[in-house]
Length: 284
Ligand SMILES: C[S@@+](CC[C@H](N)C(=O)[O-])C[C@H]1O[C@@H](n2cnc3c(N)ncnc32)[C@H](O)[C@@H]1O
Image 1: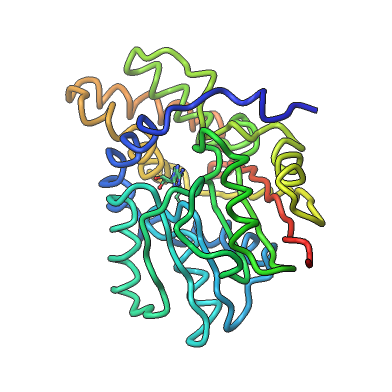
Image 2 (image 1 turned 135 degrees about the vertical axis):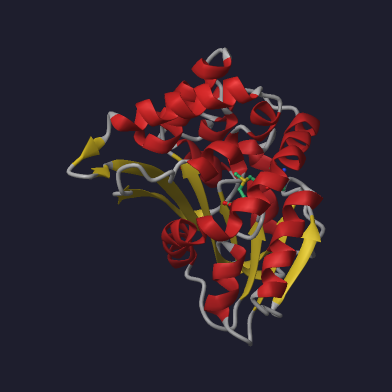
């Protein structure tokens, strides 16, 4: 089985800059995406066994997923600490928590490869679609283990292969084609697409009871709906900001044509495939 050595290298400075640039688009679309986000958040929170009154650390919270769902689940006696390396992304989480009056949320700018928290300070550590952006994911997993209480659970959500998630497959191919950009075979987002890779790293990090769970979701957005716009702007914020009106029109035309291939009985038949790596810090 492929191990960490199979992962394409990443530069953390470039990763951080890219997320700072995308933050405005992620903020703009956060509320629209909330319902879809919930379909991913609940299985992740279930996998980590997050429950009322727990102290939870959410890594790479971005603009607040799944930290806000987590705050709702743990109730007034719990605390969720939302963290991210990008201050601009985390500002979105702060804004949304204030709007929702979720006062059990804490916020901290933090690189998950070097966490600013004491040993054994959380009941659960969760991370949704973040570890793939770490140059050193083994360091992130070791840090999660360190800050967990003995027996505490951790759950990490990653994407399966790009072709299993229709929205990414169509948007990546069509937007790139319309803008004259080459396909990127090493998209960081899909760095953990190989089954077993995440579980192997979790085991190497000293976590116990490690397993990977598959999460496959279907959706049926109505024909003609622009359900893809949020995802497109969040994925290609920088490139679209530089596009001319003619290029932008071509992008929209191409993306519409791409999704038309999935039309049946008045709806687009689309799928998503994520994977959840679960484990726990062994009892001492
Ligand atoms: C795809 S977004 C996921 C955000 C959120 N968890 C969600 O699912 O909507 C990836 C996030 O990972 C953050 N990130 C990347 N590398 C990180 C690191 N080493 N430490 C902390 N956050 C990191 C980025 O700033 C970005 O907000």
